[in-house]
Amino acid sequence: MSTSVQESAILMSLKALYKDADENNLWFYHQSSGEGEVWCSPQYLRLKQSKGELIWGPEHWELRNPKGYLNNLKHNAESMVDEYNRMAERMKMETRLKIDQIH
Image (cartoon, rainbow, N blue to C red; front, side, top):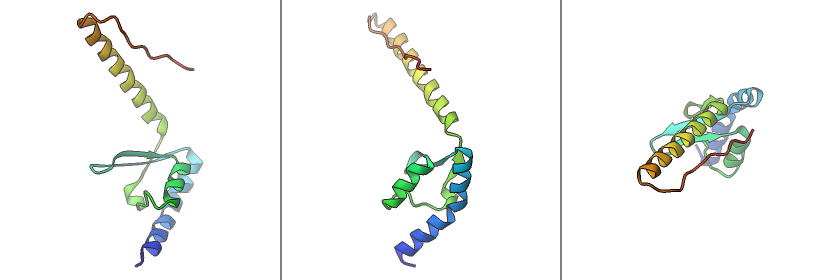
């Protein structure tokens, strides 16, 4: 099977996932040792695939709510700032970091 035919077949096999993602505001998620975590909105994944990138079959993707990931990033950022500030205090440094909340 030629590369373009194979890529077309893969893209066709993703149609149901795209429909579900678009209708439910979900993002495509992939994790592997080589790629790490990959999060793509449906629009971004379409763009990357139009450039011949991230053309992986549906078995490589999971649909997830990106809000959970965003909350996790926020929690990790807050934890890192807290850790930095504790270390700076022990080192008697005056500089402290602060995360401004935007609502």
